[in-house]
Image (tube, one colour):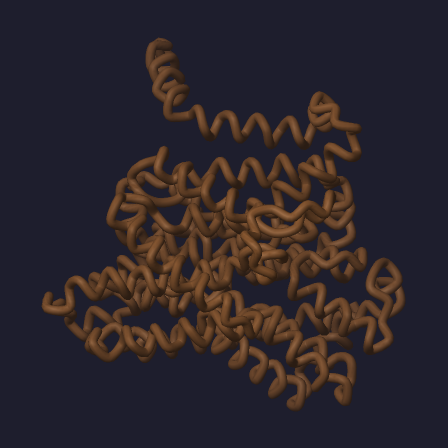
Length: 498
């Protein structure tokens, strides 16, 4: 009990609280700007923490990490420009809600869901870190391959009306992910003589182009159409009935996000995809998804923020980063003289509780910013489109360039914008393409590593119960539209006891 008290007292120091609040504000702003990301912000913050004591330095980074994950939902909901890859799932239903004048309701739900998911994962992080870290160690490349295939199978139902179109878009995204030098063999693929293509196509400019620029081109066709939005509805926050409706969605997504976050290198994007898909699978109103379902916001937001606490488990308990941002936090720990892993938990348990307290405090801070600022953020939708969308275009250009300081990324964004515009015209949703691009690299790398381990023997995949479980869930998910009616018919034919 004494380490808990020591850790919490460290966090409650006024100087540390000020740094945590600064990290939250920076995280929300960075997360909301398309093209900027939490790993980039934490990396830029790292040199400035050298002169700080270890506790305030790591606490500020952890706070920025939590808030940055939530910040991406703001622009995803308001202008269909996800500030971070995990927010792409939030945009599917968040932006339709903003278009019909319910931006405040959508932003409020995103804030509350993010906080509840984050708190859930932190409680797990506090009480079950050593045990869950051991589970994460059982995941080898074959298990990661099966998990990523399962995530890819969810693209069929993630958005849009046509599962076939979703799978085609997802497959095209996976194809784009193969561009560049193959890490295992060193073979150059689909570079077309461009040096910038050797490292592959970055998903950040593609994300910005498909969503923000694609929407801009779509809006340009309807500039003369007047939208009537009542201000009182735009700034209205979620009701008690909304929270009652999504309570099980948030709990389910919190479990999913925490588990995915614990797995090294999977991160919040996979968690958001699964959170959204499971929210749709268990919803009684599946037809609302893609048109502004409140559950379509609660699911991915709870999952992606739960992944932040989950990602800290292998980082602190094993010294294995659970995401890109925690890899930088891990470097900061080493820089400040700590040994991440079991020794950290044995020698300085109060430091673990200080990080827990900082992340918990950060969640409550960005809840205040999210709910308090929701009404202000929501008024962005009242700005005339002739002024709003040129500003979005400028920010998109800046965001695409700032990711790698490359003019090539701007061209990628412009091409992706045209592709996104054409996809929407022909009934294809952009989200599966982005998810396919992100997951494609993971599935290819884990497959290559697995085949090396198995000496090209495919049948050895089925030696792992975890792999078999994920393959079974993938098959059930893809075949459920055919199997589901047969199962319901079979159970319906069984006579019930009087």
